[in-house]
Image 1 (cartoon, helix red, strand yellow):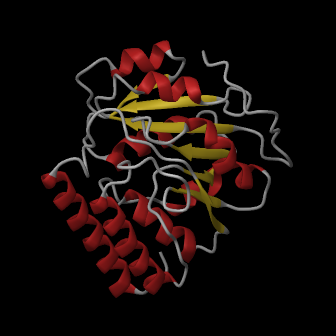
Image 2 (cartoon, rainbow, N blue to C red):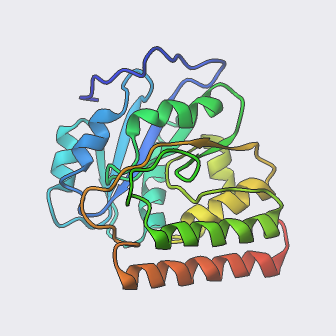
Length: 247
């Protein structure tokens, strides 16, 4: 990695020592380099940026910042994540972190998000924007309402309380593979949370900071994106609520 950012002295404990970060990205040329460079290279062993059909300089800027760059032409957040997961098979890490490429999260907080997994205290950790400090206007009203509703349904379906569907999350690699993720669009995070609970993983949330993203959101930044994402998430929640079966 090109980044020389330090994690401030945190050293992985136990047998979990390799952390790799997957960043799905679509036309994030103005932010992707900042995200990659802000990840501490004494904590993260590799950053994989998966371009999901970007038509700008996202791929070039990610590579210049020190990331491994992959391309996934099938449109969908989940497809991009799966491309990164497939890449990891050749050199598996202990812990996988997912992070957006818009610089709304604080990448250096990867230590707080992945730390409980690295230290063997949890199997799955979500960075909660609701529980942390958000810059005014960063977490849009429609995102707050959608988070609250989805997390309420997840609690009713699974019995576990989450506060956020935040994309900044960490999980043990072996558990991620065992999930057999199927949702390739907007419901990726929801499916992961439900499956984490139903498969008995030790789940935890940690507060993370949140700021206004660079550029406009492809989901909550537009009316059509919000409607499509909401419809897909509702369908997924309904599917698991009605099924009431092991995944």
